Image (spheres, rainbow, N blue to C red):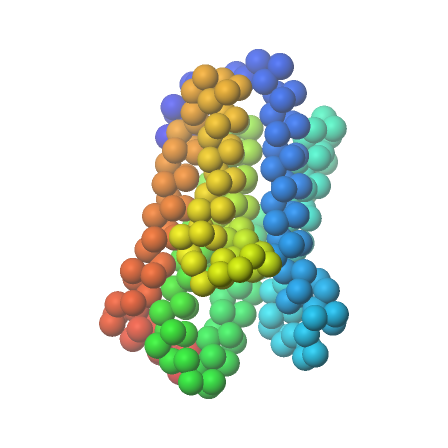
Length: 245
């Protein structure tokens, strides 16, 4: 994949680079708005909608994941402003933050799973635990690959966008739309619309689609499907039970 991307996307014309700066900054802002809308009631403006305080593990999860979204907006904005040196320095902060996100995300998932099992939702909790576990696996794969290809901007920026989009479904599932949270096809579809927008932009701007989006998009969609399939298996229930019970 890297060789193909390097050959076809390694020398983007200056006009395309300028358009890219606008597009990727816009996508970062759109992702931030999606998160703000999704978690406004349960996290950002919780005191106005919920009488109980959020547990420490979940509050830390919200802070760390929000930091990633904020950093992504900053990083794309720095590239748009031609401040690539600062962007590269902050990149290592992003790499460290990504590792922190995985740890915090799993801790939050374990906390929530144990809480729900205590409330009587045993099978549902064991099945759902596959969702954060696979989500973190896909996320860290994209970030790790992006760091490995940081010297190839055309590959790197697509991988970083996919990393961010791969964790966006949790926010979109919480958008204030009737029935959305109980319809995975709907909130996964809305999440994947962001990927479709990136693919469409590639095609319109270059008349071809980066293999990063093709294979990366397939990985995200496959991961979404696999969550429920894997989560319902006895083997997964046994593993999740050993962790959560």
